[in-house]
Image (cartoon, rainbow, N blue to C red; front, top):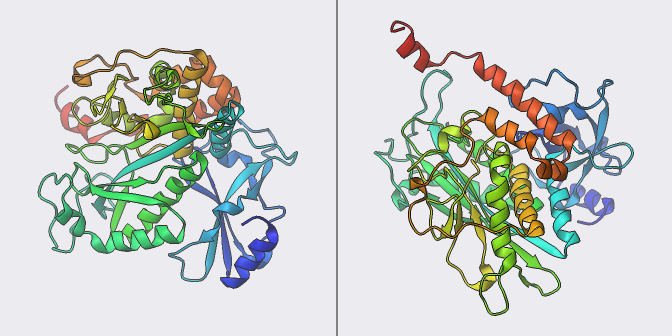
Length: 446
């Protein structure tokens, strides 16, 4: 869709009553407004307080105002390429992802979607086009209103919960066939390019892969996919959770990221030489990931819960060793032909904001290519036998991010300082909660 006249025709043809005007916040949640069709002006969009972009996952704001003292509005301008139906709405409803723009016409720098665009533009300036293919893991769990009760796997069509871990089990996926049938239909209606569905290691843990494509478009699809799966699950009396580590004794949930770069002048994979061997750009990209991902970890593991996932022998990385088809490494190079040579970044949890994950991973690789950074030798053994290289908790990760000048330059000092303040708010709220572990072991023993 190219112009507002096309939009109006589409709205007429689909008899749209309302429009969900969406934009992702720092945590990746959908913010915006639901507007009656007759009140929607696509030429202007609509207004929304800029402070929405500084909101924490708990709904709080930093003590310092990171926008302006007057708490100004910004414009939400529709990206018409994202127009589609809301497939679960009772009445005909459209949804459009909007860009955050100031009244001076400039992109709002605190928008995660704009942050990703800025990184992609760095590639475009070099004559390159980055390509992304994300893999998302998530759990289906029983509905439980009491937050103090641990989560449990749901019952499927047999009315029984899974017994143990059922990696790649077809029967276990079929247990929830009604959910996945609807999920595929609703994703197709929204243009979400689903690829493979598998049962992952955990009990009632699933993985969905998306086709490779443009980073902003793929981030939009992850953003929509999470909303869609949650809605399907709730309608089947269960939850879909994208927490990084929702259950004790179970593996965490990741968002693995396959990345490659196209040389626009040649129309070929920048990571491969004409003779089919790995290029210097490929090695420099990995070198950049190894050098800068520790400082970017706060984007890949954004919550205190995220760090429970990053532990040895759990299919999650503890360092940034790289290897060919080695899943113990934080950076894996899958087997492929030269045209499909890519790097799988295994650091991110599925709890992370996809726009920031894609932006940060591409930023680290871009820095590596621009600075000519060399990686370590590829690892042939287990990376779990190697030392930890990543931050062990959120405070450390945030401080490393703030101290990293190259990343602060790419994301903007304002963006990085605001992100830090949001994480400080979330940590303060977490720190006020006394956990069951503390009551169990400390109440009467110390």
